[in-house]
Length: 237
Image 1 (tube, rainbow, N blue to C red):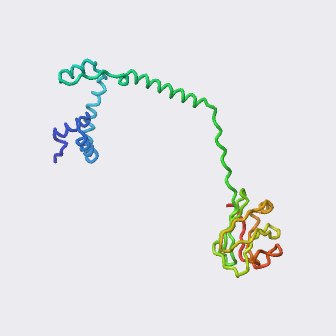
Image 2: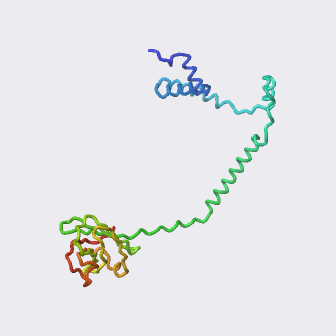
Image 3: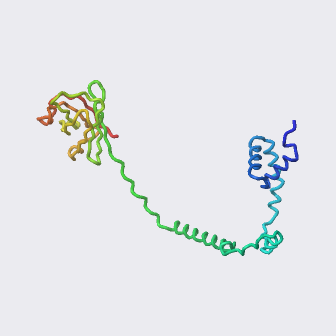
């Protein structure tokens, strides 16, 4: 079966496509044929192979100004304006050379400049965390300790309600040491504590946190007096 590629008309279109003689619509149509039909792609490739060497053999030439003036006179067109300074090819060549020289100087300055020390990176924050769970293993609170800031944040997870007139108190329990009160807090709300240096020095993976139920205002003895309802070890975050 013959295809459109067998006709002289199609071959001429492909030649004109290679030479850049087609208008936008015709060029787009040929481009679609090249993408969709292998025969069109092959035909265009043949024309490219034939015509490309001709372009290489033709050296560039700039017609003299009087030639264009003669064309304008014969066609009855207005006399072409003399080229201004900004139309001068020589001017733009010198500008291009100057820009290249400036770029080269900047490159030399960049390469010879003393290397700048990179800005000091901020040390990552030292954080420790603890999950305080009850005897059933359900997390009641989570605690996050920011060592750099000297802060401890307690956030409720699923705490049980405390009786009226009672308070929940947070304790730090160093390894082998007595509990140290961090402070009381509302069981159903987040609370931020400031940690003095004495407490910060006792934090670590061997320490733990615990929550006990105490009278309003906290333990009167400085040690837990009510039941411990949640506890958890401290670990690095």
